[in-house]
Amino acid sequence: MNDIKAMITGIQGYVPEYRLTNKELEKLVETNDEWITSRTGIKERRILKGENQGTSVLGAAAVKGLLEKTGTDPMDIELIICATVTPDMPFPATANVIADKVGAKKSYSFDVAAACSGFLYALQLGAQFIQTGTHKKVVVVGADKMSSIVDYQDRTTCILFGDGAGAVLLEPTTDEFGIRDAILKSDGSGEPYLHMKAGGSRRPATHETVEAREHFAYQEGSTVFKFAVTNMADVSAEVMERNGLSGDDVAWLVPHQANKRIIDATANRMGVGPEKVMMNIERYGNTTAATIPLCLWDYESQLKKGDNLILAAFGGGFTWGAIYVKWAYDPK
Ligand SMILES: CC(C)(COP(=O)(O)OP(=O)(O)OC[C@H]1O[C@@H](n2cnc3c(N)ncnc32)[C@H](O)[C@@H]1OP(=O)(O)O)[C@@H](O)C(=O)NCCC(=O)NCCS
View (cartoon, protein in one colour):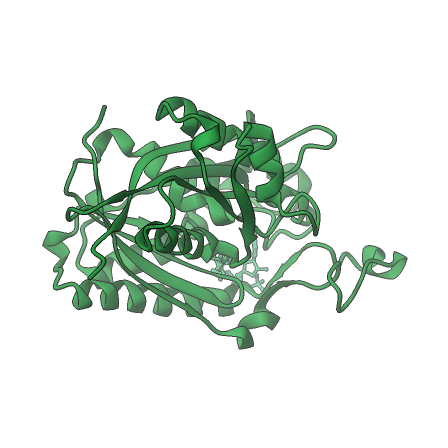
């Protein structure tokens, strides 16, 4: 039997300089810091400014930093998978652009679209390429420039999202570390509650779609909230049960950062105390495919070899899932 597993051997994040604070949002829409903080946990988000600066700028910065940090020659990368819902353009894939920017000339590359669960989907996909024994170095990057599809006249969505990217290097191992289990799910009937109305093949861009502000993320927040609370908690509990893990066995919950109240409910259901929950939503908001790798990056110095991590997410689609990872290295 093939007992190769994929382990994460490096993590790197990137967030742009500009900080969009709750105070600044108060000038754009009718809202206030108290409302945003108590309903979401968010204080500020990072925004990528400048002409012609797409998601690949964020993704390439994270991947470049990852390769430098891990001492990896870009020419040794065999595959780059980019999870994003804000590609530079419909085609080519943003992963292709990132590969070019970082000099991964021997790599092939493609994008994965699974909204806020995108990083989990891409991680599991990347892991499978390693597990088959055909690939030795795979990069998985979650990157989104949400500010490009956020309507700064809509107070129910513009407070939530920010820009960022995070990347991991996957390499093979035959010991107990790495990506040990994954449960990924989707339900396309969730489309009406979280989507972008126009800009795709069903409703290409016209003057009318632009005037109707249909090129922005549309969300029915309370429906998404109810869905997220139930399903993110369910799938996290399921992956723990399947692997015989109790709350005490879990060193860290690494949750998608959409809303602090959703994260708290998930941790509660898993029996994991708040001290074991990675959280950076107050500084970055919801960066869609980048939230989970940005958390791993922020907390890297606290992670120890052998730690059991549960990565959990939900998002547009609907999509959701949980991945069990046994962390493979001590702080360097
Ligand atoms: C968006 C979200 C924060 C809204 O919080 P909520 O507690 O559900 O609030 P509601 O939508 O019920 O709105 C409550 C009131 O606050 C108002 N409100 C909405 N946004 C506001 C804002 N930014 N500032 C002040 N008031 C606001 C609403 O208009 C509503 O007013 P009303 O009662 O007079 O109609 C919450 O629904 C949420 O987090 N949903 C999930 C979002 C998510 O995770 N999306 C990403 C998926 S990956």
